[in-house]
Length: 84
Image (cartoon, rainbow, N blue to C red; front, side):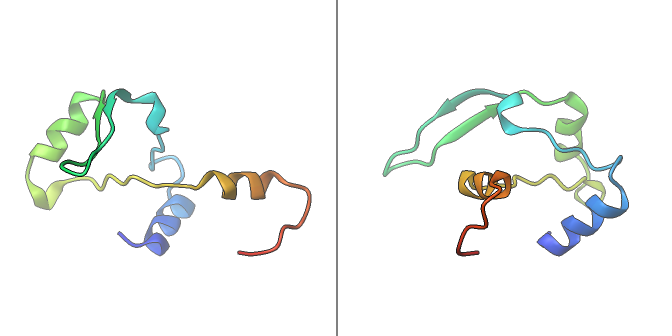
């Protein structure tokens, strides 16, 4: 899903789109190496798991969104910072 569509859904349906901070659902993690990627084990509601395993044409869209820390700092700063 493209970012434009995500913004549209957040604007039109703010009570229907759920945003969950990843740190609230991670129960285990392992760093990656040259041989394998890092892994995260998530504790999520069973309904979400059933949805992911169900009919692909009826699946909800789940996204992992990354907001870099420097952008969060930039937004909180009262000083106008150069760049972006």
